[in-house]
Length: 363
Image (cartoon, rainbow, N blue to C red):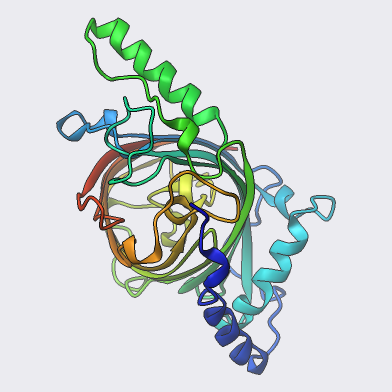
């Protein structure tokens, strides 16, 4: 089926709305001094993995089946010799002007991740018409986060390019399943036989821009114990949606509220080292809602694909709940999170569960 993305102009509407209001805002510079220390050239490194197999009670090996990611933070992302810094600066400039009217400090990150999605019947080599299609994306994202002078609001831009339909997902999933079978001496999990039917099989370029704005209403209230962090989100590109979320952190907190992301493999991370605060432990819950206008991982893009979903098959309103525990000692931090998402399509209405693990080093 050929994707119907070309018939869908709705994703342009939020950009036009932004363009109509941003020109009325005053120019802001970062010259005002604030308490946040300057970003290092290379500030941190993170490794992340997500798998439904990490959560045995709901290991169903379908939908979002695995993800792996590598992140590297620091001012190097903003270097003029990095060609990806140019579109990032341009995309970030006006949204930052809109929401931050005083001094600010910038942080930057790079994230590359591979994410894979499958139908339930992975042992079939033919198209599974009554389920979601196989799909995968390998992306490279470059992010900039501006924190205002009073540390009450942040504006984050994420510019990414990616490739749909690579064969890496098939090879990694097959290796993982074969290893698990040989280790446990059983017939399952089956090898995935339908990856040749994935969206944009063989590769197709794609891209996206995401804007996130968050604020901390509890900054002046005992913020070393509890934080509540609401956010709004806009994404344009291979996934186009409007979203909102609320995060909750409780524990022994030393990191700034604006430095935390529950899912760095998807949203990148801010590597802000705490030289004088060597220990931190807390639990978190993050709930989010998205209204999805278009999703290339379900509907396909421009390249012909054997199986894609129509817009009417996609569930537009989707929810995502994350809960986990974070532990930091010195310059190393690790966390584990349970993720639950509501159905993404109407062909098979099922919730999905998986665990994500992250290890992070500060430089």
